[in-house]
Length: 342
Image (tube, rainbow, N blue to C red; front, side):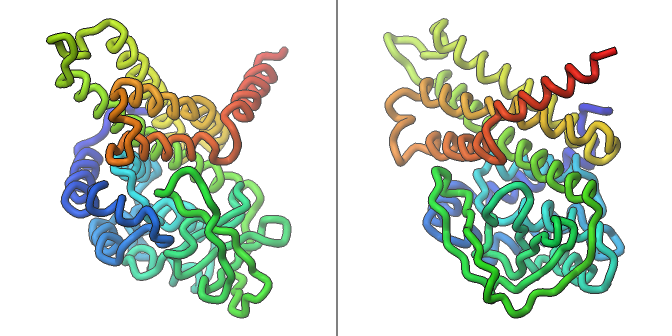
């Protein structure tokens, strides 16, 4: 396992980072979409597709880049750092990882549409009772028949209700399928394949949270360097230094877990689930980074105009995603205890 990015991966990161700065800033893109149920614009989604971000995990036979989860994690981290509100993880990760395990022309056509940016897809039934990004999606994938049969339905044929939540950059919807008339059965998956996709989504969400925590930490540290009190930068005060060190330690420890989980998703079916659970168990602490950053910012960090609260809300939604971190800590402990028994 190599913890250092290759030149190609660094180029992917830098290209996406530049695109987000130029086309999807928090001030000009994220904030105007906070009350928009779609959470995206056609121009920005097309830009991501043109960069190859939507087809990153799509097999090359279907028009995608055929890259690995490590590259997906790079993209997710940068999107998290920019608080990007669009349906990327739903479409480019959850849907693609499911569809790639299905044979047949229907799945192939959807994958091709995801790769070229013409089709936005969301998934219902991967550990959550609601569907993310449904208002932005053209298609809804859902699991039935004991969570092994994969179906697709046009989102125009379902009823959806936006669920309230603390994080306005994450749109989740309650879905009613009873009146759907265009359901298509795409194929059958093995139970272990569905479990693997659930793990993959959890890992990518952890990478997103890592990006958000890194960004708000860097903002707070920069503020500590320039904000002065009593004639000195507040970063020179020991109490503030301790806060910054605590944030850095948490972010970097979470990074190592996320990187291992991304690697395991592609290289070790045996390690994938435990790595995903570990990432969730520890990365759930990243919400504390957002809270600590606001302490460094002081009163300004609590204002609507400052972006710190948006990062904290993103991190709080991650902490709650799929259940509280304590549940995953319990599973990690149980697995390690079982492994250590004679």
